[in-house]
Length: 288
Image (cartoon, rainbow, N blue to C red; front, side):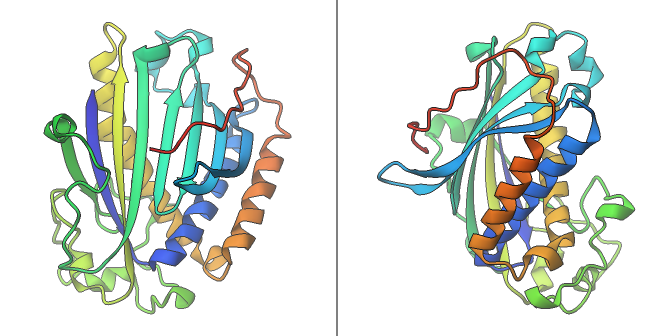
């Protein structure tokens, strides 16, 4: 099993990050559903949960994204394996998300656990925020993502170097906080811009665990997921979240939750090409 811990620092407060994250996930879901006919994100459940220890919002989605699967994987997979089921428990600051592909059973295991903390340069960062076992810690690789100046460089649409947001108290372009514009850091420590940024920041810590048992594809898929897919996904999601900040930064939690519900209802009007499985709506599982 591959275990990667991604740490992403975002220039917004801890409380605003929660709202921005809900908005971003909803918008990205809308974008995915508009791209290819019959594909997108189907929302089976979107409801509160309370397991006695945690409470928040539970979602169950089916991702119909056959055309988005890389060709080096797609050729070997039956069509029924091209639909990924996602169960997620959002109990901010904790998220727990499980992915499954019907028919693959334990041959496909993918879990993403997230924890969020307020951050300022020089703060001590929890070494094991997601409570990994000693064995898991031996396998874990820590990667810091640089949403401003990291690789891969963003296209023009997702470039945040000139981004400002008055309602988030970001009054100067983010690139201002790179004292040397051509300097690049490394992914084993917080990005250089965070050393100089004076405003509120939030760190999203996400641990991805993936195991894909398929002879001939296991190494390729696990490497692709950890070094490319999630690396790029978390970068782009945070960049998009900031670029949409004028839309969500003055929303309340109730308002952004209503926005989320409208988007999901709209998505479900799509005529999805389904995998033939019957969705499970059991919400009795507990967040980890």
